[in-house]
Length: 167
Figure (cartoon, rainbow, N blue to C red):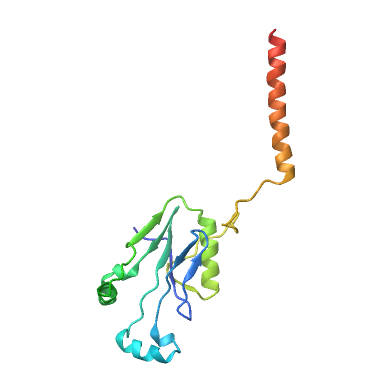
């Protein structure tokens, strides 16, 4: 299935991305050549090629996280990682019926911040309401609560009047 849009998490300092729509940490590209620690030079000899970052994609109303280490071109890195007892995520984790506008918005922010780069497709248009908070559900305002209570009261009064007219 060809993706509409994909980004690789790839920040300048081997960053990961806290992807708010999933409330999940997504691994970024790791390249020892970017590191300034003295030990990085030693590790660069062992890991000369960067470890690719995970890929977040949107395909229609479905979103996914793809693990590129399962691709044939990264077989050596995959083997080296697994030989150390580490387990890779599944090749693809899918999320049905996503809020495409919200996903596109947050992915665009990651690209704009330099934490991700577009690797295929074009950014979906961001039109509509974007969910900005993922930790606390929005509570109805007092006016919305009052409106709901008035509607309920009106429905009850209508039922009472209907019964009174029937007697």
